[in-house]
Structure formats: structure tokens, C-alpha cells
Length: 426
Ligand SMILES: [Zn+2]
Image (cartoon, rainbow, N blue to C red):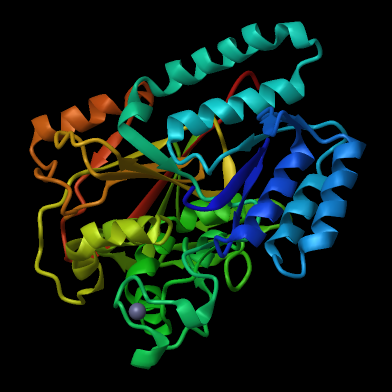
């Protein structure tokens, strides 16, 4: 046995326990831990992976942890996890953490079915029903990609939580090289309402560079949206000045004042707003990719050296980039920004190595991370892009995508046109 590890998967979370060093002492602790969840029969421990957090089990785990927590502080987390489960809530005990997305989704679906059915005889049919729904949603995508979705509903730190172990994933420097990690690096810009997803491995220099040069492109591009949703950034809810008016969010209402207000009919108005800011399309693309590179596992960075070079270069020449798909969809509305990363796990070079979906409110971007060393084509030609888009059936099945070319490194002035249509009968 390589190490004494065990993984607990609960309906909304999981915790892995690794006992070290590998010796007889830790082996005995491990055995005792296992017996909390099973019985010894004929010198063989029999554990069912399906467990229920009964009062008896909770007190058994608490007693065990009390005994060994001094030498293995991680056990305190296990105790908190198990004791805080609802009474008789189901969870799974597994040998190790499940990394395969399709396998993990299956297990998560299984636990949530277990915990939410009224009659245990319905388990199989309800489970199959949910799995079918999942299959229809994602097709065979999950056999090709692993999904990484950092949680945005609580503090989530990507990369090293401990400062002394940090190595900046963008400039590869550590504290020994003289860089500092004093600032909190938001993996998704704070200006878009992200308070929870933090990147550990980003030094203060890189943080400042992205904050000054790259991120404003995305934040300002979403200005109107931020006001409509009342998204709080660093300085509260934004108030945005335009050459011909302004927009602000007040008392749960968005207020638009503009000289470019036009009545089309009794039920339709258009508002034109001329921005005082300008937009560089390639920076918008970079800002999206920066979010992806801040929310994936550090091990993928080795294939993204060219991407990082492009991201961190101030005066990149104009390069050809894949198009960025954008849409407004009305399911799964989330006021907090959310990132979904797809990392290819098979050697099919006809589909991109990394694809991300960035969503805020009902606004969605789907984009390819360019310049990965695990890609052999650049997805710029139509037929290459179409093959990629065909693989992501759950996006393709939605209408009205816009495919933007964000190659340009020239500043453009922003002109927003808002169309307001009154719905239904007056
Ligand atoms: Zn750095």
C-alpha cells in the first residue's frame, strides 16, 4: 500500500485523509479509523462505501478523533465534517478522491438521490432517471473532458494556501526571488462581484499588472450589466458616466439617464449610451483567459507557457485568436460570477485542450484557451472551430450565439444600445 488514505464524499463536499508517515503506528491509526465505519470479521475489515451519519457513528468518530488528533490534526476536519452532517444523512467512504468527472458526477448523483428519496425502493429508478438527464445534457462530453468548477458560494483558494510555499504561476517567482504575496488575488475580478474564489499562486507584481492592464477590459465591458444586476465591486455598486448620460443602481433599481433615448413604439424604447472609456478586444480575451488560468490546477500550467507569455506581454503584436462565443441565456441565472473549465483528458487533437465558460447573470462567454502546447491546431479555421462547437452539444443546442472576433489590439470606443420592450398585455 502506497499510503494510508481514505476519502469521504458527502452530498455537497468531500474530505480526503492521508496518514503519514507510512509506518506501523500510522497503519494502526488507519485500521482504527476504518473500523469506525465497518466491522472486522475473520481479520478482514468489511466496510460498505455507503454510510449514514447516525448519532452512534458520529460519537464513534468523535471518540476516535479525540484520541489521535494531537498527532494528526487533519482528523479534526474529519470530525467536524461528519458531526455536522444532518442526522442520518448518507455519505460515501472511498479509497481515494475521484478525479474523473464522469465518475464523480455519478457518485454525487447517487448520494443526492439517496438523501432525497422518500422510499428506498425507488432508489434505482430515480438514480437512473437522474443519470439519463445528465447524459442528455452533456452527451459524451464527459468521456473527453474533466470539468473544474470552483465553488463560489464559500471561500475557495486555488493553489497554495500557505504563503511560504507559493510560486507565482505567471512569473514563476517565489518569496526567495523577492516577490511578495501580500495582496489577496481574486481569481475572478472583484469588480465583477467575486469575493470567494481566491488564487494563492499569484504574486503582488502580477496581481498589479493584471489589475491595471487586463482586467478592466472585462469589467468595463460588463458595465451595463453590473449596473442592471447591482453587482458590488471594490467601491460598491457602480455608477457609470457616459458622454450623453449616466447609469446607476439605487434602491434595487437600475436608473438610466441618457440624451439618446428614443421611442420606437408604445412598447419599445431604445437608449444609446456613448462610453467615455475605450475597449481593446484582445485584452477582453486575455481577461477571460486570466480567469481560467487562475482557476485550474497548477499542474496544467506547464502546457500553457506560451499562453502566459501572451497574457503577460504588454505590447503583443496582433495575433489571430479563436472566436469567442457569447450569449444571453435565461436558465441558471447567477448574480455571482461562475467559471466552468473543461480540460481535455484524451489525445483527440481535433478538440481544444482547455475550454472555459464564464457566466455572470445571464451573460455567458465560451472560449478556447489559445497557445496550449497540448493543441496541434489553433481552432481559427471554420472547420476546426465547428468540430469543437459540435462536441459541446449543450452549448450548440442553445440558439442565438454571437461569435466575436477579439483579435484586434486597437482601442475602440464603446457605444451601447439598450433596447427595452414591454412584455405581455398592458
Ligand atoms: Zn508573478
